[in-house]
Length: 119
Image (cartoon, rainbow, N blue to C red; front, side, top):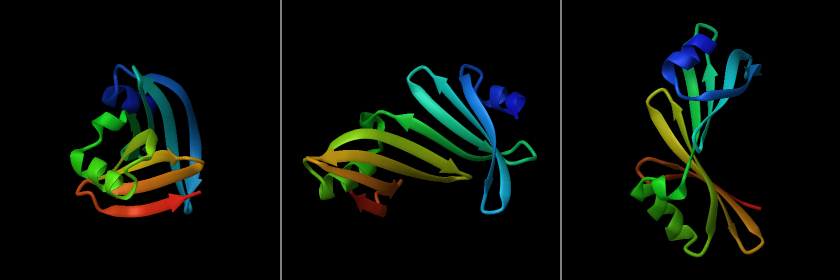
């Protein structure tokens, strides 16, 4: 898995790795950093990539995603953003705060809200 990771992300520094079991399936996860980007890559046992989670600046979110979030929470402050890729499906998770409330919203590339949680 490490060789496959280094081939895909030659400039990243590996911060840790682990064997995981999710829904009865075994995966291997490599946590890394590349500049300001943190990246977690989940590998299938055969070495193919199952999922990639990458941090990104809120300003790097696609405009459709930013608009969907701002439509519901115009005064919220985004604290973190993450891009998740599974196969050819990409989603974005935004964490934000609005006063004392914590918001977690998942949005697809078209701006459709997939989940919306307030704590």
